Image 1 (cartoon, one colour):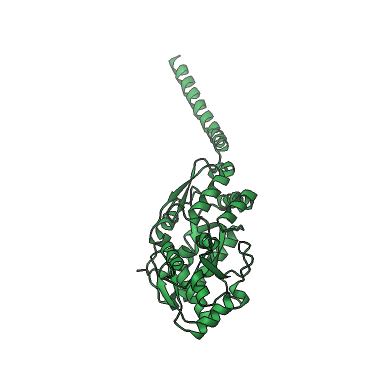
Image 2 (spheres, rainbow, N blue to C red; image 1 turned 90 degrees about the vertical axis):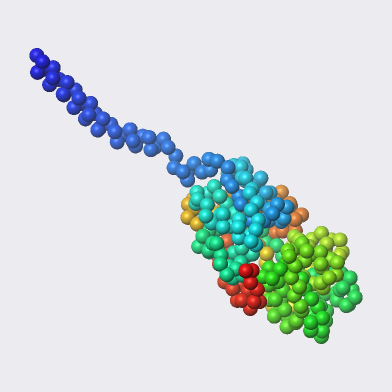
Length: 341
């Protein structure tokens, strides 16, 4: 009797083991099916957006506008300003963040086209360390003079400016936000193409350079329209030409430099990036959300008030722009001799 009961217990135990072996994989598959894949669930928490400049500037303001516009489609975005080292500090934080779509940042001509050749050592690779999402903004640069200086020298347009500069080499000077800044390098490109010589006067940032132009300490600058708009509207500055390939809808009556010097083109631009390795599905979702926001009438109207032009396109379009500008500025920075360290 005892032997029979022992056999029954063994058989019962064996059956339970067999049942667990048979049912185990079935239960595991069911558990997997009920757990969404991370990409499919994205996003499940707020996205951190690192702006590598101080709050209040054009990049910061446009970023915050877009963050509000995409709230309904991809959820809340927390803007985190991390200025310093010409934008390198904030961009480096993006490069080293997890590639999960929860950290975004800004790529701009300064950090991704100029700084790689300006700094002897960079904390990130401008091409390999990022997944471009979408270009958001293009801002025309404007060749402009102090209005009183222009009247005194009888300069009313680009032709009379070039005539004076060629007849008086070294008599004009131009200001910029510093050695190696976009304004400095744009000024050097312009001088070379126009066949003129003017003295470069660097300042510690775009705001001091703009103040020097308004006060008449320097004769002209090539600065972005977003920075100069208020002083242009007030009549303190005279816009001679824009540096974009076509006339800007923001200044339709101002000619391009290219109308006089064919092929001349310089843009200030910025857009959204994620860390390299971010899943393409997430990059494409972000691209779609921000493109929709950029095309919204209220966004376009607000950007126009800020004297910036909204742009959109594919991640591939933005990647091609970054690489093209990165290659372009290598020779420009080297020819200028500028160094940041």
